[in-house]
Length: 445
Image 1: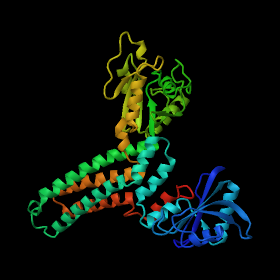
Image 2 (image 1 turned 135 degrees about the vertical axis):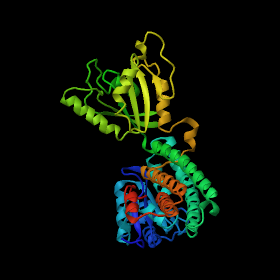
Image 3 (image 1 turned 180 degrees about the vertical axis):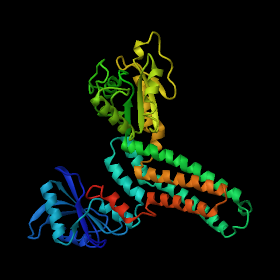
């Protein structure tokens, strides 16, 4: 397999359909297509043709489209053969292309070639896959913005800033005998602080974009008999979990995926956290702890009649969860009206539905679907968010080293942060990373 191969794949989804597309890319794409179509192809014009096999027999009637390099998706000559969407016919076209010198494309190889030929950066290439896989309109719009380069431009601007700071610090190293303040230290520190602020804002938006892409992983946790399973059923709109007054009824994890205003949430009901219990219940609590280690949000369900008693029981278990939301359930059993909701606490009744709308709104906000703000979001992936977090750590280290005027270490931290940003767009991306990313694409894209 080389970059000079002509590749081919069925670009439409598996199964029968009205139209199916076979896509070619590479130096022999036009010649192969013209042989099959029996006619020359003019770039960017739709040509009606009868596609024929090696014996001259008709495979199908269809449309052939040629896009000459470099004005194509991959930057190479690209041809699309549009036929009826019969899997048998499309497979015959695919085999004919291979017989004429093409090879079957690897998953994601078309987008990989677009990246290698400078048509897309790595963040944009990944946004192609995100757009295809989008589960709702907001996720699709976020992926579209990433594909348009919104995320990449923010990353590139920040990388340019860090490069300027690196140049400043490394130049100052040559004058190590001089105090940093005489070498523009105040301007350097101000620039580094501004870069850190820009990075924090970008990281927050990227985390929101990741939630729009992947959904929110929320673990329902709390003491026994607080109504966790009842609340899961209320959020899911069905009796997914067994509900009982007997403590320890829930012993294993129960997952349910729900959509709230177009935002996907994976809710995981867990065993009640308490001291004691039999061996099976203790195993359920161990699994609950492990699930919390992977959670984006802990939805802590407490008994509204005595919420303070339940908080202490779960405090240690949720200590490392990034976000927490407290739901004081059974509010219908209070002697009077429930207290007003606060920033992190909602008073609800799974039985009567009181407060569920407010809980929906809080969960939607946690998942990044906060109304108009989500319209400007871009999609992001876990590896991209991780790169931004590593950059933030390196900037913090650089600021600390500058405070102590250890310029060599400050320069090294800025270099590491700059390199981490380069991983997002592919400005600095090892081959094994590229192989891992594009192997997850669908064949034909």
